[in-house]
Image 1 (cartoon, one colour):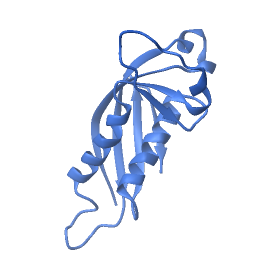
Image 2: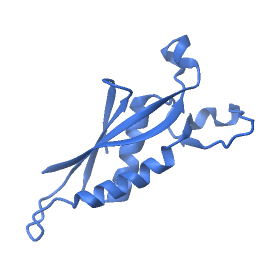
Image 3: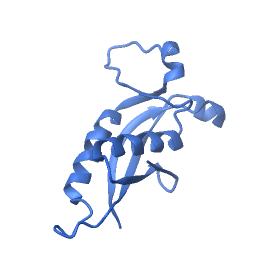
Length: 136
């Protein structure tokens, strides 16, 4: 059985080197995240998992992403940001900061929070009408 929650958001900046000149610039999006959790239907509760538990776990994951600059681990030593502002960097273990790898990272982080026996799928929207889905 699968349950889901929709419409959580975070704001972050990223860059995508292979996507063309415009996307190579550091730029930001409001990313929308939907999450789906698959697991056994527990007869005693009549639920797979309480929606509140899923929402709380996803909010905790997204807090690390919100108002951050997404940087692949391989580029971390090259990044230099200075100014009269705070810098929050979200390092991802993947080679690119694309929406596909963002979705995969969030799916894995949510799966880690929820644990077994659950499977997780997230859909991450980069703006309106463009999304990537990943399973963990």
